[in-house]
Amino acid sequence: MRKLRIHLAIVALAGLLTPFSSVFAQKIFKDWPMGTEPAAIGLFVANHYVSGPFYNFGNPGQPQSITYPEVCTWYGALQFAKASGNKELAQKLALRYEPLLAQSQSLVPRADHVDHSVFGAVPLELYLQTNQSKYLETGKAFADQQWQLPDNPQAGQQEFQSKGLSWQTRMWIDDMYMITLLQVEAFRATGNKEYLDRAAREMVVYLEAMQQPEGLFFHAPDAKFLWGRGNGWVAAGMTELLSVLPSGHADRAKIMDSYKR
Image (tube, rainbow, N blue to C red; front, side):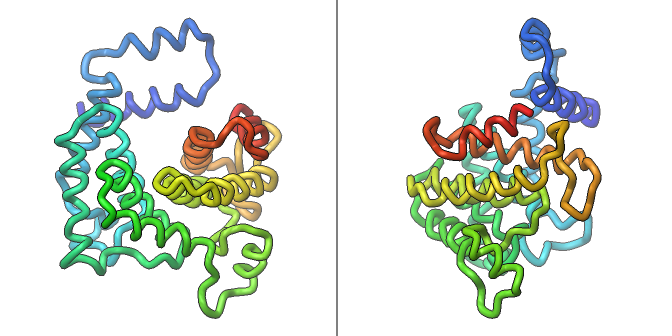
């Protein structure tokens, strides 16, 4: 039953990305079988997540550091708690961060890779929801370091940086969510337009380089297959960005056109 409910939720989410008539859309998003409505599935998944330890890809013990699947699930659960007004869940999700401020600080990843840097989205979202400054500086540091060359950078990293992009750029479609989410959350938390411009600039470069004629994306220029989950990263990344990108922003039209395609 649990697997069935999660499967139905995934099918429903996929429907959000599929063109269909407005009449059908109105029916499918109102006529939910009992126990499969978004509020029920969201609560089920969030409670399942918050009740377990930090994720370690199925290996025994704690991970060496917080992984990006953990970050994305944590951020999603925080968004669900906010959207549903579930203060008890929001508190549990905030308490999950407390060990990272004390005895488990070593679990905080280093901002040395795109998959590690996305961690900053969690403290930034916690700051947005709690207004506690202890979260802001940590999250902001991850966003800033994404554009600050490390010591002894590689040639490719320097080249991306010289073009105004993050040195963590890989030209993998995963990055269109990982980089975007962190920079968008930094913008939401600070109001600093520089974070928004970074995310938009990065997104446009990826779109121009990687979107195929039918609208979908290869995983990478040297991995020419239409990876389903990767295209989900793209769709989610563009959604996060378009939700805050002003109508008059120079890059909005390009991003919206690619999103519709």
